[in-house]
Image (cartoon, rainbow, N blue to C red):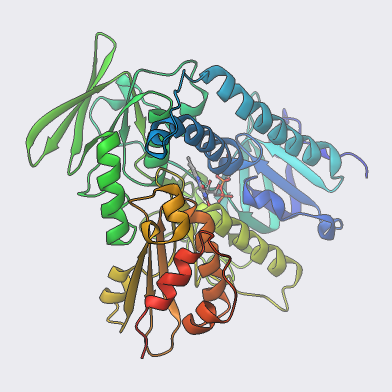
Length: 477
Ligand SMILES: Cc1cc2nc3c(=O)[nH]c(=O)nc-3n(C[C@H](O)[C@H](O)[C@H](O)COP(=O)(O)OP(=O)(O)OC[C@H]3O[C@@H](n4cnc5c(N)ncnc54)[C@H](O)[C@@H]3O)c2cc1C
């Protein structure tokens, strides 16, 4: 195939190029245009690094750091098995460069493939912004004016960005986010992590395992508060033994004194100050729809800034779709990928469109311990007024749990006693994001509890026996 086109900056105003399709964002959006679009004139616009959040500053590098952190943390837990191990240290620059030495070439290769490999695709490297109905300008660094492009169809896959915490002095003091914390020149001695969701707790695990003193500041009374209450409570209890966890704490002001970051907190216990060498902000992510001025093309947004889409991922404007973090209830890569496949199908088959399936969206938390979750929490079931039963099974009471000497992990199932269908499952403990896949499969294909428990073999004495036992404990009608 002939080479694609990297659009050079135009030096004159007034040129408007029209495309069949414009895709904004090269995270999950980049997977849409394949050989089936060979006859389409396509533009792809990207303002940052090719590949988006997951590849460059999200799921993939974090999990590569998490695995390394798990290895670094192993000696600390080995003695209770009668194995004396010692951690002599971690070589941060080597770890960092190994990880990004793999990732950066993948991002560069993805860009090269688009720029050089697709004759029908024009790549615009700049920030897109709608200026009118189906009309976009792209500000290209180095160009005196933006370029204007129009299209019959648009896919908005522009993702989200870290929220800047509302703390006085934070801009002056400076702070890290997921976009730069993994590329630090050297490990700090002390890190303040602001936030209590999965990004905050994963980084807390990574850096504390590497020997950094971590202080975690949470607005809520529990960490990971979106999880099932029992899971969140257990996680908070374990985390509080490893990190300096400040719950119910509102960060109000930050200053730097003699090189030390001092974060002032308002808490029910009174005013407190925590100190660190760096501050990592991980308080959530905001959709990038605002930076795109999507209203200029008639696309509507929710109050929280997400683009409004229907089940087919269509926005309020005919011919404009949105997917992933910019529009989704779920800021998760597997959801963004699923939605991208839906948009791809609906672009190719406008006469036979399909809906996205958001029935059973799972997630994993790769902190320590790990968490895997799908479906309703017990709180959700209660608030919806559903009739439900629960069952809990500790790792400590299955054979593989004995092998691991696990004392804190468990699986909790929520089920409908009348139909025997699982409503949700929540696991905290070793390999939880892997174990939960069995339940995702059961729920997705409507497998009832009795059939799942007794309609198949369970390898003995493997970890899935955790789920087998939990299933057998559910008191169905
Ligand atoms: C630290 C961290 C860890 C994570 N770990 C996990 C995990 O383990 N599992 C999981 O499922 N999810 C995880 N996520 C979430 C996951 O990364 C996102 O849900 C996913 O990447 C969203 O994909 P997307 O295609 O919607 O957006 P993105 O991948 O963010 O892609 C959007 C692209 O659009 C570009 N863009 C934005 N605005 C413009 C504009 N105006 N003009 C041109 N280009 C623009 C951006 O530069 C970006 O490249 C993690 C996120 C973070 C931050």
